[in-house]
Image (cartoon, rainbow, N blue to C red; front, side):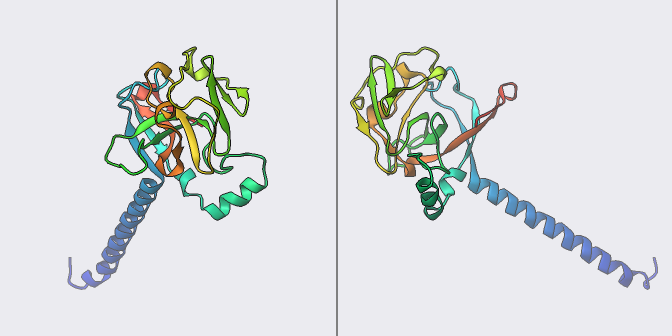
Length: 202
């Protein structure tokens, strides 16, 4: 290679390096966005059996919690829905902290049973929300016993009532009461492990 050819090749090398750096920066930005919007958790409890088992791994969406209040409020006013119109809904599975202040504890995984503003009570092994019995096919016939919180209870503006599907073996809102939106880490959207049990959750 002659010395006259080197200056012609340097711009090409600079362009390649710039393209590589740009690609790495875009990949890092995408990783950061995905990390903010989602989380990955391993199930360590039996409270969601037979639908989720110990050792399974799930992806959690944090997007519902990121909707700004100014956007959610008009949407709520335009509908008769009592819960956040753009947020969490009945029957969704969430990962949460039991304590509103202690983030060192292991998160729990539960199902949303009642939303802000709704009235819930448990009677004769059945769950009622706003006076109507819930159709809880996901508990596969398990009986819902009553603990501390079972009398008619009207949830506050930012309160949720959660329970595990394995009702006889679940520490949930029946014992520790309603939780606030701040205690919810996010909503389960995907079970990705084991691979042969891959499942999406609406």
